[in-house]
Image (cartoon, rainbow, N blue to C red):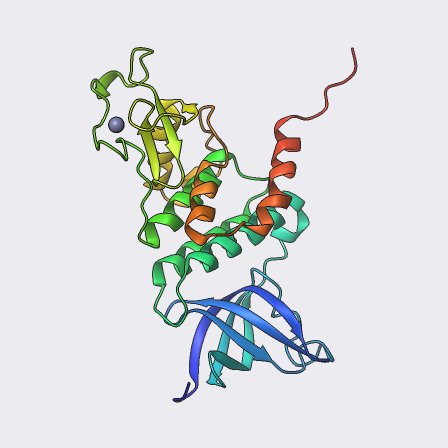
Length: 265
Ligand SMILES: [Zn+2]
């Protein structure tokens, strides 16, 4: 890799420690997509980067071409920290999840302005909201991230036969052709077209489609009808070919929030 240094806005999406005092930091940028860069002295002294490299932070960074695919992280300025989101375990974990899925779906060294913009908005909202968001927020985040990476989930038609409901004006009717969700096919499918799927309510698929098309900020207080909570995440994992680590932490937290302990008796 060669060329002049690049000044970029970036969101810190993760890091691994390297050697004794260094750190390899992963960033999502609008112009360069996902990049890894060597942050020399990031661990030995807190002076060089301060707290700028915490996951979820928005920074302004100078990236200098390094060896192979690795950049060198030069002057770095914290633009927006995310201390608000860190006050709440669910929001902190959702922030980590948003970083992991947007960065995972982003290409390396390729412009990704829409995934960057989505993660920027999601982290700003998670930082400023006063309580964990309702279910439509995560569904909107996941469905938009899939869309922005070119794999729009199929939610209003069957992914196998391409037909919408025969009576879409009354799609919540019990007589509707039952459908399931197939993460590997990319969305909704009739049970008769794709036998073996578990049925999902059509109302849920339509509500997720509405979330996909709504601004994220409008979804903070929006619930979803009953449905499979991790179907879109399964689709992302099928596309990536690996599990999302932060989901393992987020799932039990959401479960606990949805089922608070009731007083005895
Ligand atoms: Zn079908």
